[in-house]
Structure formats: structure tokens, C-alpha cells
Image 1 (cartoon, helix red, strand yellow):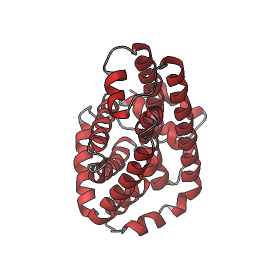
Image 2 (cartoon, rainbow, N blue to C red; image 1 turned 120 degrees about the vertical axis):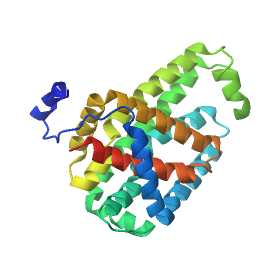
Image 3 (cartoon, rainbow, N blue to C red; image 1 turned 90 degrees about the vertical axis):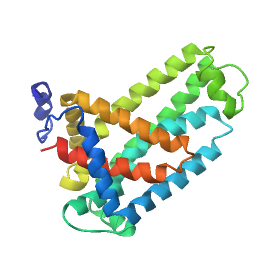
Image 4 (spheres, helix red, strand yellow; image 1 turned 120 degrees about the horizontal axis):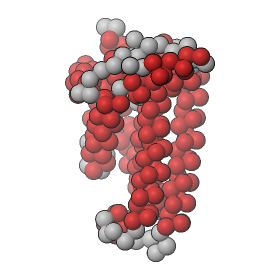
Length: 257
């Protein structure tokens, strides 16, 4: 089923990927929940830390709607890197080991160079998206910027800014889809196998290409769960971010032989 992706092997030595059922992401969430319960204190510390950081960023951006929307969508871009410590917790748990919050960060040092490269790539992507977001606002939105509480109603729901909404969703969706395809298993693979970032991203692209149904379900679940985190003013993110992070580890173990 993945023969069309074997051409990548001319340039990269990639592991084989498995084909799974479209419903498999539900099992990843179940296994992620088990990992979170087994590492509850460390997992919730991650969730609380990034929830506070996210809240502060959103609070800073409340007077700048373009930056506010870019910050929310940008969270999905940097999420795979932010959850690296959670992958390490799941990796250790799978080996019958336990680790605390500080110890999980120490476990990342062994692959710090590749994680740094990947983090820099995501950072440049986030900066690029923020600039694209500002350009889209400048091109299609010419009114006085409204209060943020009315912005989504007046712009996204009123039907008066169709070109802006379509352009924003198409550009943002295309960028998010690309990052998602390249990051589904990338960071867990680097931590587990010590591979370079390029090989990990190409493996991730192959895994998505071979499992379009499961990838679509997984992407939808991530959007819904993280969206709930934002809808609860980051309170729900304390639990939902660790859940998605741990589940992502099991997605990697399931998809990559």
C-alpha cells in the first residue's frame, strides 16, 4: 500500500510504516490516558506550565486580533515540540521506568542537537505564519479593528468578510496540514531511535500518506481537544495537552515498525 512512498528511500534510509484502521487514534488516546495516569504529577506539571504560558501569550494578544488568531493556530504548529517531555515520559513508562518532571527534561539532552534543529524549524514556521496572518489582515480587512469579543462574530460569522475568512483558512490550513504531516511521529522517533530530523520528518510524511484515514481522524481529534483547551481559557489544557502528548507517542509506536 505504501509502494508510492518507497521513492523516498533513494535519498533517505527510512523504516517501514504500518497501515492502521481509521479508528485507531481512539486507542492512542486510551493508551495516552493510561500513561498520563501513571505519570500524573509530571504530566499535569507539563500541562499547567504550557497552559500558563499560553494564557499569558493570549492575554498579551487580546488587543491585536490578528496576533490572537495567529497565536491560537500557531499553538498547533509548535505543539509537537512542546510535548517532547511527555513523549519521554511515555517512552520510559513503556520500559517499566518512572520519571519526574525534571528528570524527563534531562532525558532530552541526549538528542538535544536534533531537537534544537526541529525547534528552530518550527519557530521559523510560526514566525512566518504570524507574518502571513498580518498580511492577510492588511489585504482583506480594512475596517477599524474591533474589540476581540466582537471580532470573531463580526468577521468570521457575519459573512461580510468571505474573502478574508476563506484566504485565512486556506493558507493557515495548508500550513498546518504540512506541519502535521511532517511532525506526527518526528519528535518521538528522534527520542526513541536517535535518528536525524530529516529522516524523522520523511518517515512521518510516509506514515501519513499510508494512513490518510487514521491521520485525518487524529488531526480532527487534536483540533477538537486543543480547541476545548482554548475554549476553557486554557484550564482544560492542563489535562488535554498531556493526553494528546502521550497519545502521540503511541501513534508513533503504532505507525513505525
